[in-house]
Image (cartoon, rainbow over all chains, first blue to last red; front, side, top):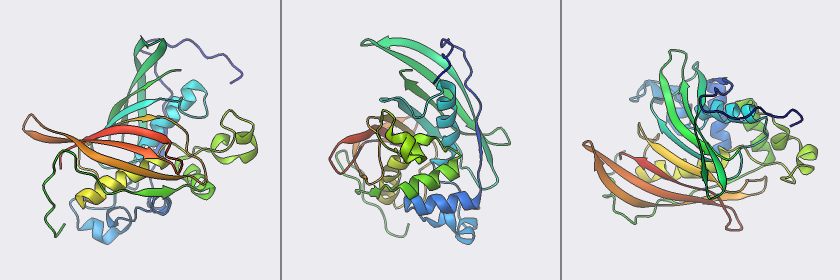
Length: 139
Length: 139
């Protein structure tokens, strides 16, 4: 917060962030959330499912986006009234490295508030899109 | 998956789900996500901030919504291409009990796909809205 941030311009790229997903991480998230669904935590049941193995809870692959925004703004938390729209495109699995790519797409005023639109994708190590979406916030 | 699910109708209420937030949960989420920002994990620094105390990472208070949808559909994961739009209205803190209230708001066809729109709010124990939003999915 001590350095002034550069002005925001359409096309600006946000810092890339990534997360490496492990089964331990998924198991711990199950304990936090209470969501112990076998598709997340039971390798044998998950292997027999349509997914063919365990998958991460939906929040986990979004984490690089949150971190990218906060690092970009040198901020501790998302600004109040931040809106996020996201679509789940593919599951994330243990061993996947999920990275975010995000950039400034829009800059408008609404009722005296500046609204910056950020487009983002979360990609795995095979460059497959696992989540895409937009985020609108007042910097 | 063995019981047929009842038909979906506009106005249907989804199962209520709740999560009790603790500092332990936040600390564990920091370890999962790599986001050890003091606003989440350092009581002293957070107390001196505008928030007046530690706050949960943004994913944590969304968890009741995910669980509500999955319980409603008796499903292990969100359907592919599920879209979520959410707005953060207020921070969630250790000691808060966050519950979701969700209902079916829309039912339409798009390119041969049935799209169900769900509106949701996440409320704390003082009935303050911490997140609101919509989710669109193909059941």
